[in-house]
Image (cartoon, rainbow, N blue to C red; front, side, top):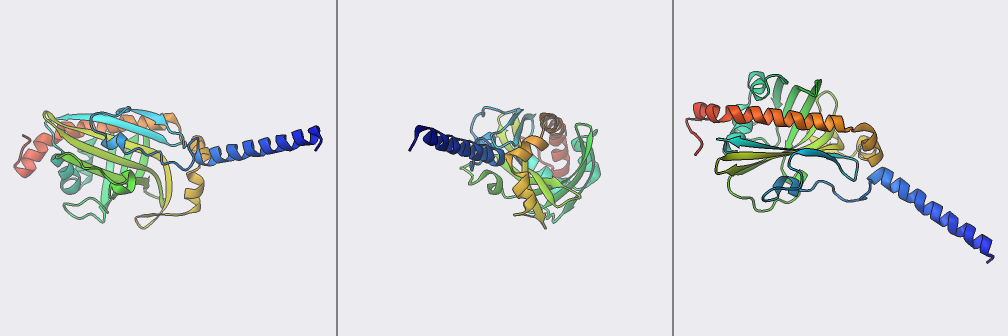
Length: 256
């Protein structure tokens, strides 16, 4: 084969490979076929590399984290707040007086949270958000859980739009007791898109297109991620302040 023809064939192969690589990166990101939700962000003993902050992950999603120290609070109190006490828009406003506007529940059973849908209207970054928080078994977000230390409460959900059957993010709060109270590690993974049928995430064209790295880089921005982090820091700070006295008055119990 003449050298010029061999060079031409080689160049076509290289260009084809590069075009394919660009397509793979555009669709799946820099780490194709990997799951960028790291359970250690929520569950690692001690502290992880990013306890409070935002980062763009290799698949185009944003990881948002917030660590809240809660003196005088125990994980059981946080569980009680979600599973038993939080019932009305007034309760919801106590959680963040300047941002939380309205709430309701669907499929809520007293003492339980998995399977319930929390319907909310709240301000995040100055913009009104109408959201549906669908609480799911933690394994659906984090995978198989390790053995957790006593005094740990794990709460995970799909977060989506209230007025459209679309999920747009996954989230987990992990509360663990400490000698002085408790600390909450809140993690959100923005850009996980799925169509909702009832309460279930199902395969759809919205998910196929919305979960491409290209769509995520185009639709998600750092400002929205920072706004979410700020909101989480604020609302969990309010919760930390109100829970010890509220829990004691409502249950007759108190923290150790």
